[in-house]
Image (cartoon, rainbow, N blue to C red; front, side, top):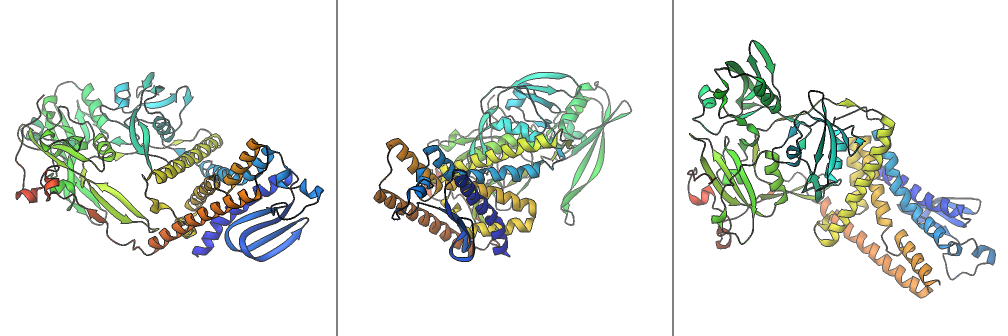
Length: 602
């Protein structure tokens, strides 16, 4: 079945590519002698008019043979005028670029037929606004709804996020609707950061610091002498409501909790929380919980409660966090990268704590291979039991379903951050939405592929990602197993790859022909047969070498076992060089827990 899905994926792309060359050439009265799908011996052929149509044995491409391609043949004057060489420069360019162009257009139609069927989308709703980030500084609040950006209407969170990512450091004029119904103009300047583009590669992007999902009102307490702790509230408790003046106020998100507190007078009330059980119910993979109600005399009884976003809920058995002494219940306080020449003694807790787990994760993602200075607090009386350590993240390698070696960096902990999504809203105009999203999605995918090629050339992306037809066949089979939606998505991406590949200025590819035609146009004379022969052989060698390299990578992938457990590359601190740069682990110190260190000097 793999061969069947491979042919079903690739054949239409090859057919339309060659058809574009063929129809454009015929439009300019160029005589086309052969139209072939595939290479090698003919399995089927039939002549209609002046063209022989062929299906060949090797389904890895196709070709259109035009009159005059064999320079050793003498042609009659009438036939010379029907050759590609006879055409003016701009017509030649249209003929050779028609094939890649259609490969770049096909995805637009594929994506259109997907997006035009979308009925609902996530609203441009500001669920969680991260403290200290661009949106927070601009005045955006949780619950705001973005109506317009620079005068253009916004109908989905995807559209808003895309604009922000494309605008690092640029001024964006927003019109937002507040929860009370009032409209307000806000100027947002997204921070310049590092994130993933449309094809998953790291690149420079804009970040506003907002999430569609709202942050569930989960509690964290670091001061065990606080009034909230004395009342019985504990880290991990989820606030579900406040009963005040005999009226129940439902609470779901942290912003709800803050909003209710602002409106309350300072008098007695009841706080209801759900406390998760310590054990996970294996059948459903979730914590069950019990409702606890706490009677409060005043708002002061809530003193000590923090958002649970940065409080550790669990640590992995072999992860960095456990090895350096971070435990469930601890609060992540600060994180920064360290220069290689910095001594360990320069690692100290920051004067100001980070505001959200998203900020912590951003620093970790931007410094995956660098030393990190991390500070955290263990709950204690006064809430000042600080710890600090210098370490690097573990690097884990594993194998995906195609046999690709993939890497990720891991810190080895989870926090009490819980998120929830708002209800979707109807698409205002499915046709307009489909057109816009199909063009944008195609462009973003193409942009990402260009960046990927650049990264391969510069060595920033592992060249092991280069594959041959074997990889395409694997992708076709995997996509088919997941359904038609994924199959056509892969078809669109392969089509973009084919279009982009054929535009490379390599002789024997369409981009190479375009380059030679351009040189002839500049020189105002045809290139010599000897020169054409040399560059054609060079181009053939380059293409064959690339195919051989991709095939070699495919063989390596085929013999990898995707069931192998991920391999963890642990940062060692036992050699003298590492000891100067990384803090010893608990095991290396011979202790089970850490002693408290001094809090940061304010």
